[in-house]
Image (cartoon, rainbow, N blue to C red; front, side):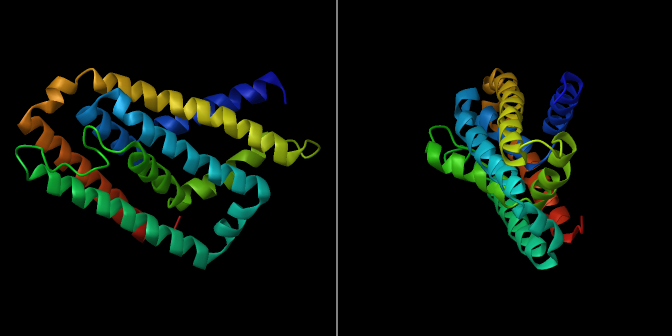
Length: 209
């Protein structure tokens, strides 16, 4: 792989990470309510889910998902259900003025494994991540190269870039934690996040690509 090709890969991955989506909404919500450190588990879980699809693409499994209507629809429906569920939970949390009933995956002091599971599930149940991995990685792997090893190594670089972006977002939002801790601000954050997640879930459910 030439330096120009590698540079193109890094740029493309960085831009893809910056595109707002369900993972962005989850990171913003968790870091706003619990600080940047609280967002680390969910970011870690997101990377596990992402790398699972990258590894699947290396073995050709995501090609099956991209080609199979049934597999794609099943994952799409499950992913939509997860996003809508998280959105509804955010709206329910917004109804509590004290903030004591915040759902576990976003509350301060929530169990890290639960937050990591939410992050992982969000990427695992997003078929667009699978299709992206299948369509994106072959462009940067030469036919004469070791496809499995090259894809897995590029995937690790992908994780570093993706995690760096989301940690940056978490640090930026976490600095304003005191502002987001205000009851009215927190409630509006919950409502906005909930609306975004539900909208993304509905969009995923009805989309064909």
